[in-house]
Length: 467
Image 1 (tube, rainbow, N blue to C red):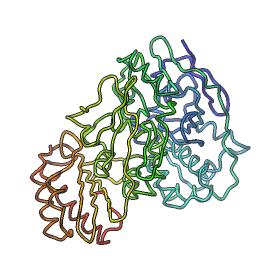
Image 2 (tube, one colour):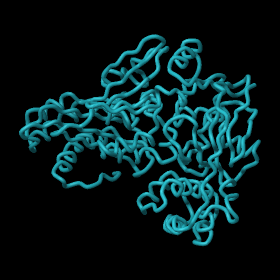
Image 3 (cartoon, rainbow, N blue to C red):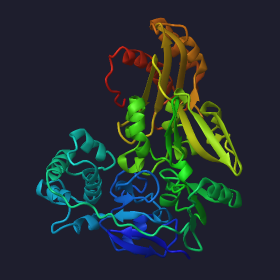
Image 4 (tube, rainbow, N blue to C red):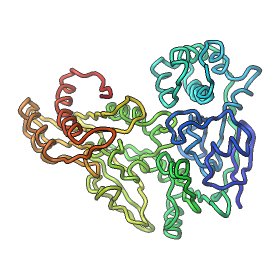
């Protein structure tokens, strides 16, 4: 057994446990820190939020994280802060804890620890957050009693206080293996080592953030004898910008991607904030989103419309292909058993290009798409030279609609062109019916999104809300 070494509330600890145990289970059990609550067990309600600072990657600050889908093996070398740790800061705890109490921002109290943690993370990063930034920080926390107005006010008041900084404890991080004989996590630090381990252990779970895969543990009670964690692999953690492209390593988190995406594709950035709360964005990765090959994964439609390429690597070799060729069937891709996703490359926007992505869902934040449509056009002298239109939720795979793209090429994006593209979309897909929408609804919505794109280009739509 290799102990899992990390920092907990400013003190080094060694946990002797299975690597596939959730951090929430360990905190409430062995650590006897029961301020962190279990609600949904799937990273949706935020009651289990903790602050984590990882030793790998670009993040140099504490980020709110869902401990119900964070596994103990992922904590190797990390720094963890719980609501109890916040209470020990200074003489009266963290400022947000006091303001939440004074402002009547808590009733039953079940969700309060997670809200306190989320806002403490925000106040650590932003000394004077705007109201919209506060709402974004709370998007991953449900409050069923109080309502958010007193909570937002408490955050605004706490921002004016002089709060003690969170401890920046460091922990020795030389071990590349952690866990028990029953469940062991391997943590390589370079691509060569990762690919060697992948070849040696084809049966091992390949784990990035775990925002999807870890549900097998938290919900289905699956057990993982062996997993390979990608978080510390240096080659997978980079963001490189050339004159023509931005390349994101597969283990880059959505939180790390967001500033660059915001700068070049603001519509895509809005989508990222919607499908992932701060807690999910701090864990979930680009490679993991594509690796699951979900037909309703929200990253793929945007990447398809933007003309992204994906690089796959295996021991001694790598290959790059258009993302449009990557998906082959329901939850199936061209990735071989011994390959991993190394990176995704997106062409930088050029003059004359327009891009928008629209997510239709039952609620605005943190919901699965009924339909997600992404649209990209390149125009010269008022005429469309190229078009890419991609959808999620319309087929067994995220897919482009070639006939709709053809309908727009050569046009000035007038009404007949959009009508032809709408008709092509309606004729190209045979979506399924489920709890999120009927097949007929999906088909009509997807076709109508072309009209929304037209209105957006004309400046008639400022922000796309959920329908």
